[in-house]
Length: 195
Image (tube, rainbow, N blue to C red; front, side, top):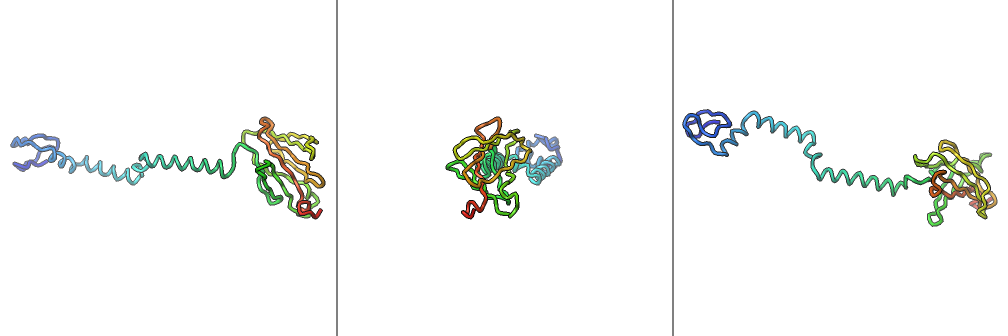
């Protein structure tokens, strides 16, 4: 740093001029420091941090916003897509699915494809990952159990449409009897009243 009194060069950390004894002010020392090599390195580092978005990502407001976005996506997936812990029937082009929330029942209508197996369908289910085995029970309209079967989650579940009565199926998690769905299966001509 140059002395303002005698104009001779001194080191940047000097408090006094080594030639004339002039005391350097705090402002003069800071100005000399900001003109040096270390100050230039600090400016380069600051620009690098801005370019690397470190200033933004280290900001507490940014972190809060990201946390709220993640929580929002979680709530959307839980409420809009459906509860991930429950069995659910997945839509398919072979059948139409309607869910009666009041009665907690599914109505599956097999679309008439003029196939000889038109009264039978392979049901597509969303099965939570914690479920390893399913029970399939078939009941008549008087709630009497007609048959029971056990399926692995990888097995195909075949259901038959009701042609005469209001028989129904109960599909449940073998280990959690509360995780179940009630399913009525109909052929589309029966629903239209043509059969």
